[in-house]
Length: 280
Image (cartoon, rainbow, N blue to C red; front, side, top):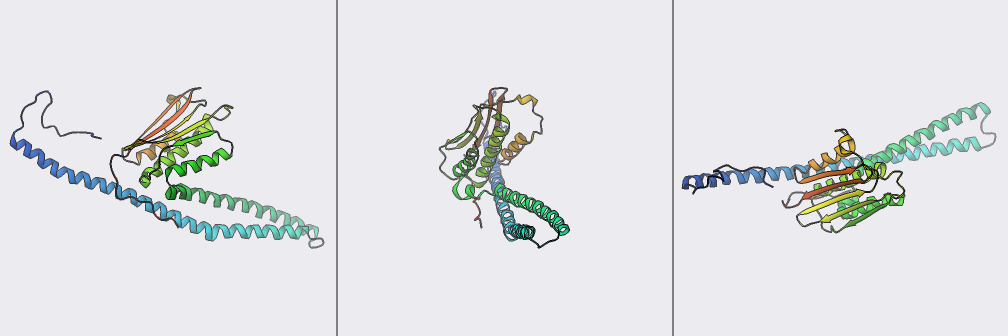
């Protein structure tokens, strides 16, 4: 995509270029081309660095959750069992002690639920950093897996994809997160309380472009009434912006006519530096 040009001459005043002008243009091109290529390589290296950093943080959280989170949950559950056994053993405790044990059991149970919530949130954060299905099997498999989880809980979602090849990790990550955000928004706000509501998700490979579309026939909304910082739309636009101008995101909605979120990603510029890190 060309965003500007070097103004050597006006199209409305065409003439033959002088030899020195042609030489000057060639010199500018020779200087500019390596600079542009270098900028693209730096951008690619930066995206690879972010992918590697996400993998490192995910591994650290995995270790924290596995070594400490699970241990805390097991210890709290054992404490619950022991306290419950004390209460159920005849003659083991006097009435006053039973009251204290019941209060302690209540506190331990509450702490267990809180620890379980934190542990589950850590898992969610790990998957948000790098989804293992996305990293190992690709975009179509990851979106299908995500949708299948919601379908199991009753959400009416249809998914079609002709994408078979692997894309750059940053592109796969961006498309996947926007798909997740758009589907969750459609479930929570679009088709909620709509008996015949349905969500259609499509992923289309057009050689030099990949298009993601999420459409629902729900309540829709007036785009002009959405505040500028609306979290869902803002998050999707931020993620699309991470691809440095290669992605175009549109949100089309009308009251009572549903909503369509569409993301088009340009694949015409080959990227050589990125790869998914190996997950532990």
